[in-house]
Image (cartoon, rainbow, N blue to C red; front, top):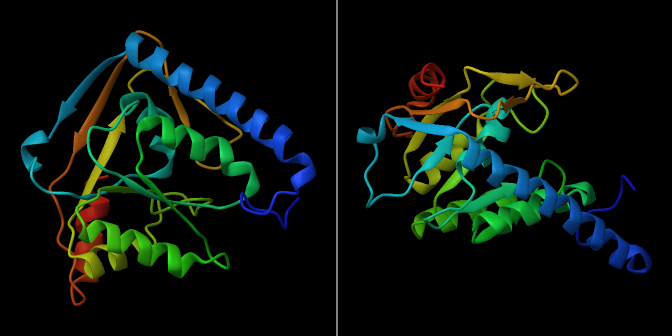
Length: 213
C-alpha cells in the first residue's frame, strides 16, 4: 500500500476504505469533544492577536492531540497542508469535522511545492493555517524552513505557541512523545508574539519563533 495515496486507492476496496476511515475519524473526533467538555482550557497571550488579522500558527508536533481537544471547531477560515498518504484519510476527515475549509495535500516528492503554493495563495486571501515545523516525522523540535518560506511569501505573520498540559499521559511509542491530557485537568494555550518573516531575516525570525514554542 506504500504507493497509494488518498486519491488512488483501488476502487475495489474504496467503500471499505472509506467506511473504516470514517469510523476512525468519528471515534477520534468524539473523544476530542468529550475531552474538551471534561477539561478546563485557559488562554494566555491573547493580547498579541488581532481579531481582524489572519496568521500562520506554529507549534511543535507533540502538541497535536491537545490541539485537537482545544480546537474542536474553528470559528475562522483555515487551510491545512497535509500528507496525502492513504492512511491519513481519518485525519483529513477530522479536519473536515473541525471546520477546516481547505486541504492542500502534498509532501516531499508528492506535489509538496504545489501544495505549499496553494496554502500561500489562501493565506493571501485571509485564511489561517497551522504548521508543525518538526513534522511529520522529526527531528524532534527542529524547525524546518517551510514555515519561514510560507510567511515570507504570503506576508502573513507567524504566531508561535505552545500547549501546556500539567497532567497528561505520554504516548511512549510515538516519535514525538505525544501527550494526552488527563480528564478534568487544565490545558493552557500560550500564544507568543507574532513574528514577521522577511527574506533577509530568517535567522532572527527562527530564533524568535523557537524561543516562544
